[in-house]
Length: 491
Image (cartoon, rainbow, N blue to C red; front, side, top):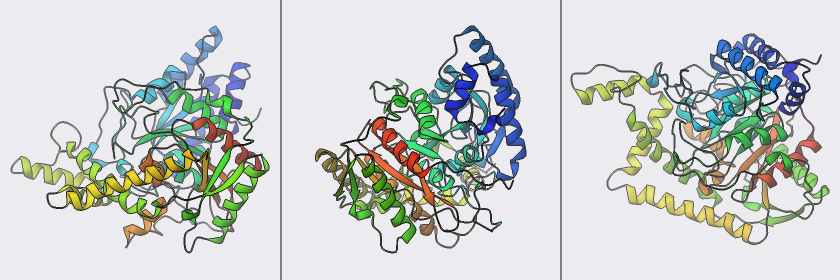
């Protein structure tokens, strides 16, 4: 029998339906893989007993013929999603050993459809980071390495544990969140597929908040088909989330293999950055050629406010983070440091509980929201955000169906190589991805090739609001042309 961990989600679904193997066997194979790959630090909490119990329950349902669409599929859950009775920390010391008494909407929908939880995945603290180096549990290792090198690379962030675990075949898919590129950038760094759905497509209820107007959950998977299957279960209206949109969830999997003939693909000139590596430019041209060969029409488009996206994002996101993280005060749950009075208790708890990057962003956010600076910074950034959104609306109004861009400005880099002295160096990794969050649009990252050192590179497709189906169709064209590639095992 094929190694069960090397199957795609779609192949595993067929094997389970054909009774070739059981969900328990599939789960055990992945639990063994997780044990053997602890050096990657992808999981911050393993839940083997719960996983086996869930798998046994699913096997009984499969035997009776009443199993759900994800029956028996073992998944990893980013540690930002509340899981009832299972520790959820957002990878921050300030939450301590917090155990929720409730389940996030998205994970409850995955369990409803028969998925199995293997454990909680590492992420940047409160999802603030582009390399998964800010977690209180330590950095995550990328299963990919440069040719001939033993340097451990970052998997991208903030959903680095999700991307690393999927790429290293430790789970068949993973939940992730994207505030400025935290699904798409790690997917590009690990040769996995990651989709950030339209804002409001997936419920945010029960997910630890970073920036509420930008956060959106989505899946990281091994293929576009697998991502489509996961998103179908994750998406849907939720009355508990006031930003959740009540629109029907289509069968995303049906979009895989659909013809892209006649679709108009925009190539934005503003994404051609000064000093962009030649291999990124080459990859972008190849991706465009593949789509053209499949019958799509390429058109140059302009998104004139792109250059303001990153600075505006790094005002809006920290401002919302400052507001959201004010609830962590050491009074009701999580870490509590003592003080002579309540104010000192707050200060001591936050100083001890928040890591350096979170403290930096909270301070930026508090500053831009403070009296005298609100109009100059926060209000102006929100106006820029409106202009960025209008750029995309103008493109789509001219008949453009999707926009093709690079996903990242480079391949994965080594742990500790960037951002030490200058945090802005790290922030620049989000240059191609933040516009999508600012405009609330869907975006998918698909593996498209490798750099000169053998590391994966991804392309990004940006779609119209609630038109994730077109992204899956186009993404599959790139996936078929580029082929699938997996890292050589070193762990």
